[in-house]
Image (cartoon, rainbow, N blue to C red; front, top):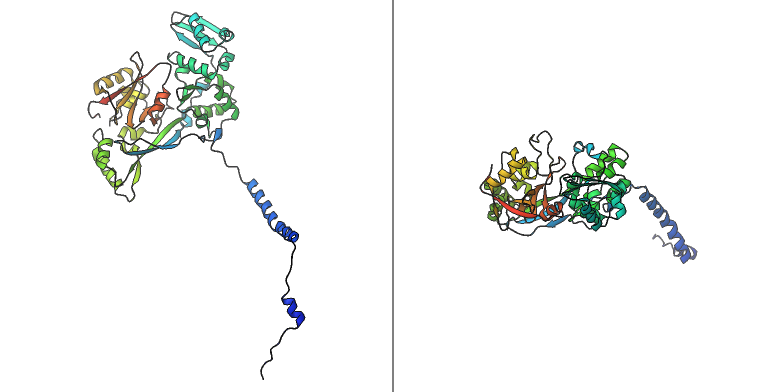
Length: 426
């Protein structure tokens, strides 16, 4: 017997085929009930996350308009690119004796009071400001000890002109040894620190321009106002920052290894340079190398480091001339740290050239009087190896020549002489 086909009754068939109709208002309500709770959960989660520190402005190393990377001009040195980095000295190098209270003292060598008053008037100081302090006349010149109000009231322009003038005389220690940062970006100098905002605001008031650098000389006006030694130490570290360059050479199968070896092995180092460059050129797609590995042993040991107090010679602190004259030497000569030793080193081992410098040439910054105030060593394009100052907090770094010139700019015109080694030194 065949099973008969069972068909649903009309009412059941109608129920299976039934369709639910919802109004637009009901649909909106259902969407609202489904989505809004998740939106609220997301908002609560975002609010509970820790804030991400900003990298621009006073809380970050770099402002948005600071160029951190770039490429050098092509030349016999090859294809170079650089990254700008910030170095900060270690805590144990912070000498709090620099933070003690002291009066401001401006010495005008060989001048009379009327001449000094006329000069101060020319930079915008009022008669009331010139009278608000103590004047002392001697055979050597004039000393003016301004009140704190006078120092505070200087405009940045007046401070730049006055302190640039005072810096030419060693007796004005604060101005001659001002803290300098070779950038015109305050955010790069004072960013990413634990300094109190009040401290940064106070220091910013006393900043002035020195070429394309920023400078600070009024330590006696700021440090005594800070709440404790820890804040003073933090400020010293920030003021001692240096912006340096990290430079890399790109090497590919298409690179002229012979030409690169010829340039980077100046000083008789081809046996060390050529095998390294050849090995890099064989890599698929090529690679890059930090040029620190291509520079003489002296540079490799010292680059991006600070002087070790134990290793500093007794005769004199390690300065720019000691650093320049030892560039190619495998055995370092500490006599170059003295004026007599440096003068002898320049005269006996170098000769002046006119033209384009090359790796290892010394750039000597000289005054119209003939005296030298700085030396550094040419590396490539606009890059030099330098130590700016005798301080333990001054590291050995790579910088652009333009930044070094800005660092040493004053109201006196400087001449740069190019000195070339007579032969391989060491």
